[in-house]
Amino acid sequence: MRTLYHFPLSGPSRKVRIALREKELDFDLVLEKPWERRAEFIALNPAGEVPVLVEPHGTVLADGQAICEFLEEVYPQRPLLPRDAPARAEVRRLVGWFDGKFGREVTDALVGEKMLKRMTRRDTPNSALIRLGLTAIRQHLDYIGELAERRRWLGGDEFSLADISAAAHLSTVDYIGDVPWSDFEPAKDWYARIKSRPSFRPILADHVPGAPPPAHYADLDF
Amino acid sequence: MRTLYHFPLSGPSRKVRIALREKELDFDLVLEKPWERRAEFIALNPAGEVPVLVEPHGTVLADGQAICEFLEEVYPQRPLLPRDAPARAEVRRLVGWFDGKFGREVTDALVGEKMLKRMTRRDTPNSALIRLGLTAIRQHLDYIGELAERRRWLGGDEFSLADISAAAHLSTVDYIGDVPWSDFEPAKDWYARIKSRPSFRPILADHVPGAPPPAHYADLDF
Image (cartoon, rainbow over all chains, first blue to last red; front, side):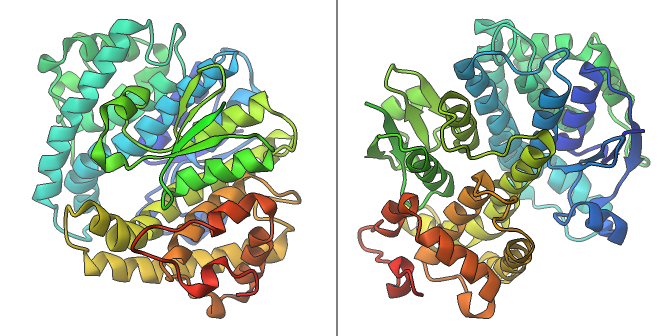
């Protein structure tokens, strides 16, 4: 069986969970708390980061985007990248945007400071960083809305890794109730379409012990 | 003509410069200071980040890794990724390691704090972060050495995007003299091989006005 080592509030973990379901590939989930630095896990991925995917025949894969590119190459059914090179580059540009820029400016500042620091008990939340995150997310929601109004999906005509990366990160921020949806209708409409996809349902059922999500989190009509 | 908007001390810019030269593709360099947020540049890349590549027929590409994947797809000569999927995933895992983990833990902490903050005059360097960066780089050099002793190149038997990503980031730290080479012989031997590649020569000739590199920076026998 295929095994995915993940952590529920990790954007890259969610990205791989969604990609696997879009491709209708079965897998077992193993909850990994990367900050515990479990020796068996470090042996799988010396970076000590989730996600890690172990394929049925034992191939070990790490790094969210590297795993998604692998899945796309090995399981070409239900493609998550367009066919021609400029369109693929556009999707990958947005993947870089959400995994990189959004991750640094928003996810790290909000989910990182408010939740992960509490869970790992390593440090106190940095309120200046949280304020920056709350400002930055508004710019990102504007940009998502702008893309969603111009195209069927964020990266082009087809649903792609651009949508998956954006939704994976955004959903972790939504889990802590920090997405100001009501001010950003076009982004909200796009996210409503994402929420209704079967691949996204397990994400909406996530539940971190001691930190339940707000009521609207799993609601398709939020 | 092909045009690359870059900044000399940006790891992702260097990565694309090296990849273009490995593939023997001609290009013009345009120096871009991303913090100036030039309107014409933001129009090319709303993320406001270097590198941006404009192809001869006008296709605009942004994000270092998205650009490298595009180059690999469109110009398959002198491949920078192996052929089979697990080997490609291994190279991309390391690309993620250097663009992500190394970038956050080392490049941002050292080049970001010591050089970019000074150039942009936005803030004073954070000495606690610099100390963390100086500790982290030692772990990364250990890991590079471990890979280089086990394989011909970092990602496997062939020179690949893993080597390019690692060398691109590391070379920016070397430019400010913060790589403790003498304690890390295997990593140093690998970097010496990188330095002798023709694709790397323009990187070694980089010169930031007012901040010259240390003497060993361009020396092949350092």
